[in-house]
Length: 342
Image (cartoon, rainbow, N blue to C red; front, top):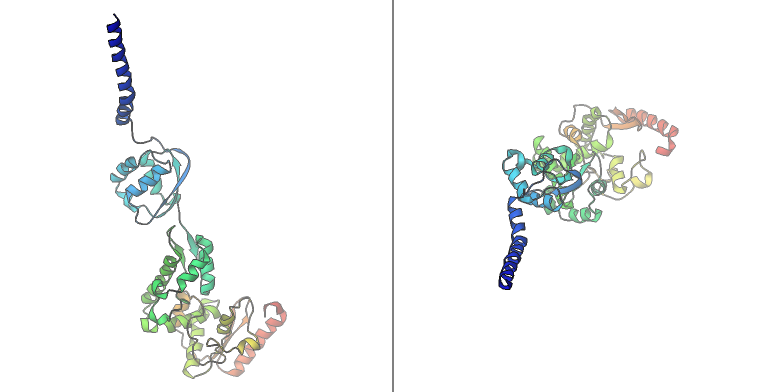
């Protein structure tokens, strides 16, 4: 009887051990590797450029969105659209079925990316401030990147200066895009626009320089081709351009109409009151409208122009000094009424 009881104990004990060891294995083989339904709560993941379905699945599993990366991989394998998932940060739910997670990743509503609109006429110094504020990158990163013109893709004609080559537009950068990569994108966009408009590389710097002056001097698009004509007429005569905007660029001055006698006396290559010809390069980032004006100035005899009402942007053009003097009186009258703006 004792022997039988011992033997029975061994059998029962061995069975218990076997059950405790083997049951999890059996369960893992039969349990689904996927959740069901659309989940609940909130979670987010970042998809980087070039991420594979496996990499995305791993990020989803780590964030608790899907049960297993394998389940997401299986769902992606049978969905032809899975390859079109765009880089960005996605707002998802926790404990979602892989198919539901994939559907949310394919819906652009759930995607956010660093987006920044760079308006026309900004200086490079202003552009990088806008980029840093929108993307969260340190401003110092942009300053360092600007010191490497080759890395940015600047053409030789830029002479190492990005001014004018950071094309104004709305950009969606990848969430992990570096400052240098963002600036590369903007330079590439500028060169692309110049090619599209038929500007030969040898003429690019001249066109950008004139366009940047047009951008700075005009508010109404209709005035752009006329301002470009004044510039060309003066260059052909030749006459000093005498542009306040190029002087303002020296001092990075905004908010005041006109310039002071002291500013116009500054010894600087951008001072078109003293230095003949165009300034050494662009004075801001011109947009398409200003580029078109520089490429296609309207025919006309004007040698002078002045904004007689800086508030509205109303600009008067003149053929001779007498006509210009009359227009300047209109500007001075405006300044008398608006002294804080002059």
